[in-house]
Image 1: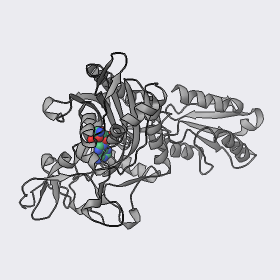
Image 2: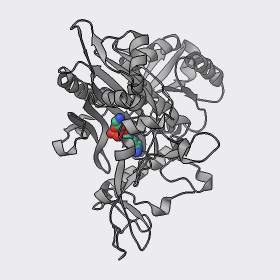
Image 3: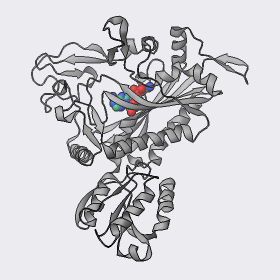
Image 4: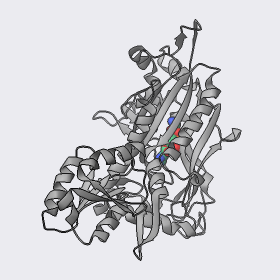
Length: 456
Ligand code: GAP
């Protein structure tokens, strides 16, 4: 099943490969990310989020949805099906043009992206580059990245459907539905998160490039002529979103595409890039798609997708500004950026300095001793916190060990019930980053933690 042997992983610079490896190991050890189908030897480039990782990724998606939909009056949400009418992908240009150039090594049969040959490594012998084995490379041929499947019980060409390679098209084909039912005026946006599929030739770098992944996309419809203003606005908004959630400014940049990098329909495109251990790479693209998509779907479906502007008393096809992010790629960036190693009490600890809103577990509750009513009191506190956010209970091992376990999954606060709690009702609250402790009355604990999460 696995195609491990025929892939060409991208090489990471040696000095940072170790850091990436430590993060991948931590992700496995602490239940963030597991290899898909691991007990069968794994399925290459597919990953499963474990109990801790699923919370992290949900928090990333929730933070995006809160920012893009809840906190604004001009964007509504949508959740479209993954399988769409095959004509959608003809209209969008994916059937004809969603391709990468591919070459094969005639000797070892490894496949490489022809436009990534300089950095590509042999999937069989990763120290080798394409052709190092002496094998001749074939001529480049175009390979369509869409996954095909069949609708219904008969596997014939007439029943071919595609797994969507982007969520965007669902929003374009529903433009008129949303306009009619949500009673929107321009400018307004439609947002969606969900799975997309691409049969990438060279997936790799952990969650960075996979064949099944989740996107967070928003199509913002504007009056032609106002498009460049909104393009500038969304570039800035999206760049700042990552900073607000704790990404270090020195690891983030906005890169405007050169004109020869632009898709034929795009008037402008910029990437928010993150400095991963394997180099600066795209986190999110912001594109001015002009009126390309709505015009294509009008032509292919025969349905009018224009807009009547009552104020200007004119009809036109709106332009679209699209911020398109990847939920898994963003999760990886937050994870990598948060990962730190420092010295605490003479020991090296690994810590995830995640923004409290992204932290998978918000607080852990510990009885200092397994007696004197402390476990019961700790459970009482746990029960009070549990309806509000994810919390954990831990009574195993020394208190230092318990703190370390929580540091590794990024829990911002450790709450300890001790001898004094039983006397005056105060608990200690230990800060993950500063490793300092303060005493808070247990009746104040929940409002205080909620205040800190909301205000962070
Ligand atoms: N609708 C436009 C669009 O899909 P894209 O740049 O191809 O644009 C948007 O994809 C985002 O989706 C990327 O910036 C990236 O975060 C994520 N993405 C794309 N391909 C991916 C892959 N193979 N694995 C993980 N994430 C991917």
